Image (cartoon, rainbow, N blue to C red; front, side, top):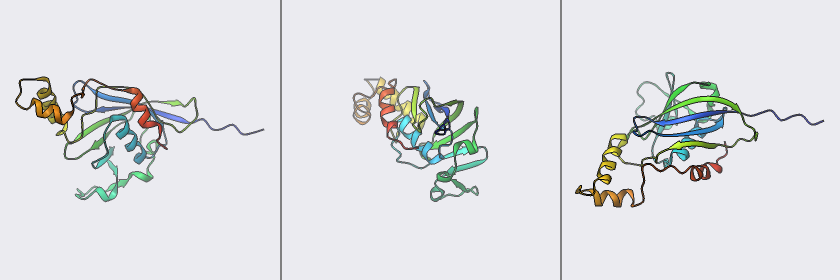
Length: 190
């Protein structure tokens, strides 16, 4: 008789872009033993970022990321995210920070909302829900993004035409495409 395959536990995680109004967020399911490096990739794909900038996780009093990216080394070394598993540093109900693009200062609150058993028993990632478009890269952080949206909303603003060209005629800050998000996530091997 063949041995039964062990059931795979998942974390359902909410990713909230801090200070966004209305809230920009995604809810994803990932294997609970996902490497932090792979979680970084999941966040990039789920939010719609382009992975053009440095990042780090701050969990408790430790920072996790790419050690070579710690060029400023503020006396707190960065733990290599490629060797740390999420369930080794965070459990159900944990909240921690994912910091992306230190210049624009995009801060994401990560909340492990619950632990579930994967009915498909695969190491896949899925986005279950979300709201609002991710800001385009290099928009000046959450406050720069808000300023750009105000310019887009005011056809009489002298910068309106240029902003429309830069952000795109079809940019809709309230749009979230679940199917497209899952398309991006489908090819990930975690």
